[in-house]
Image 1 (tube, rainbow, N blue to C red):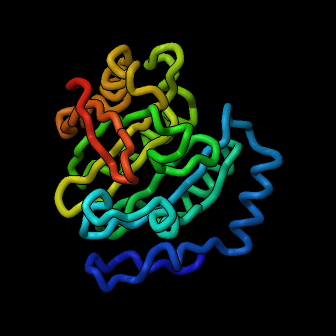
Image 2 (spheres, rainbow, N blue to C red):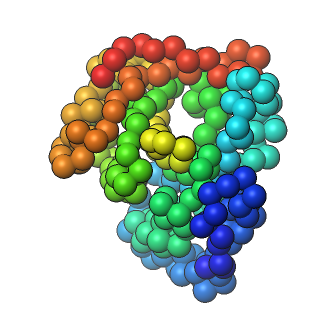
Length: 225
């Protein structure tokens, strides 16, 4: 993989999206795994974005403007290609503040304006920076392994995982497709079982339903976890 400058944490740091490039050898390895690896139940896409100091809802950033700040890293279809990508992107601990990684089902954008996302929501977790790497890894593995399928109601599914690097605690979000069914889910119990030694370090923030109005994000807390 090409060199990536992830050490600087200030606003003058190199733009990660511009330097996140796989070497030809890595691309060949991923492509090989895509044709010969163990298939996932659905494809998953890695995305990278950077959030500015001013929140999108306040700044009035349009969908197209936001998409311009999104970098599609790779869409994976097998277990082996997932690991080939995951192991060749900068670790969460090396990523600058205000950047986010997303792993989304199929090739959907991490946008609430996407038709497939408009009725969905997220479970939001604040976590200590020392724990972020492990939490992100466990959540994406649970997602691609469809371990959340047994934790959501019929007619709902987990469709994405986001990790956002912030100044203090980091934020991990678990996306679902139907926010009205969130109260029937047992996602938090699953997180307890996946991270028994870290659960006391995680602060559940509730289930959030995203509503879109004039391209702004509107937050509505449906219930508390």
